[in-house]
Structures are given as structure tokens and as C-alpha cells.
Image (tube, rainbow, N blue to C red; front, top):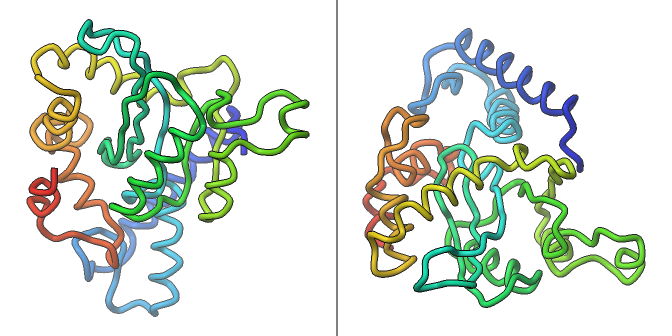
Length: 231
């Protein structure tokens, strides 16, 4: 699925319509506007599905990308990260000497075993995620594509030569590079980002707190400290 300008406009429009619909619904059963105890269960189910589809909830969409580390201590090493779109939570990461589709799958599989699978994943057309050339596609899909198919995860492909589509990963890598020098390990830096650093677009909440609060009702963790303790 390619994310062109038309689809981006559609998603933005859908978000606005959904928010307008949410405010018109009755009082909430769960601490989110739009979930009503007085409406039929089917209506609530449709509402939940729509909110997940447009990214209102955690695990609606994860971003993934690779980045070559600049810090001298890990010079030349590559880091892959999976970032939750709704909360900016870095759900999984791995550091490797090179970037491959197999490594992308290893980290994703480990992350899913811990947090369960997302509805969709946004990636670029890099060969670790997508068999770009016609010859490669004739030989078969990448390991990453096969893994998504087996686990019923939708792959969304960003526009070619348009890094802004996956810009959230770029912003996270910028923060990562600026702050890594203050930490003794990559894991410690990511733990700080997830559990301590307040995020401006999240009303100064930490990503882990937003991740818990934006979780669909059936998957919700009521106490974010349960996740913080697991790092």
C-alpha cells in the first residue's frame, strides 16, 4: 500500500470526521470520548475499529527504519527501531553491524512477543523491507514482507524519495544522536526517551504513559509503571 498525497489527505480528513463524531457521542464507559455504555455493542465495536484504523490508539501503526549510529563508541553500527505512531513509544530496537531483512524481522518478532502485533507498519522502499526491483520480486518477497503476511500485519509503503512520510522516525533518530553521548549504552538512552523524557505533542507525557493511555480497551494497561519496570 503506497501512501500518496491523496491518501494522506484522506487520512487527515478521516481523523477530523472521527473527532467530530466522538464529541457528539454520549458519556464514555472508558476514559476516552466516544465509547458509550448506552450504545449497542456493535456501534462500539465499529467505533473501536475506526479509531484503530486512523491511528487514534496504540498499535494502530508502527513506523520502522534503520539508522547508522554516529557516536564513536558504536561507529558504523546500525540501529533499527519500531516507533508507535500514536504515542511515540519505541516498542523495539536492535543494533547490528549491517542492515538486513532478517535483522528487521528478528527485532519485530521479539517486539511482538512482548507487546503483541500492530495493525500496520509504515516503512520505506529499502531492500530490508521491500523487494524493490522487478528481478528481486520475481525471486520472491523479502523476509520482512513474508513475516508481515504470516502475521496479518498491513505494510504501508512511503513515497519514493519522500522521507517526510516516515518523518517521525527521522525526528526520533535526531533526538537519539543528540542524547546518546550522555548515556553509557543505547538501551539506557532509549529507556530515558520512553520513560522519562516528556513529549511536547503528547501534552508533556512520556511515550510509555501515552502508549498505555491510548491502548484499546481490551489491551489497556492501567498502570504505566508496570511497563516502566520491565525496562
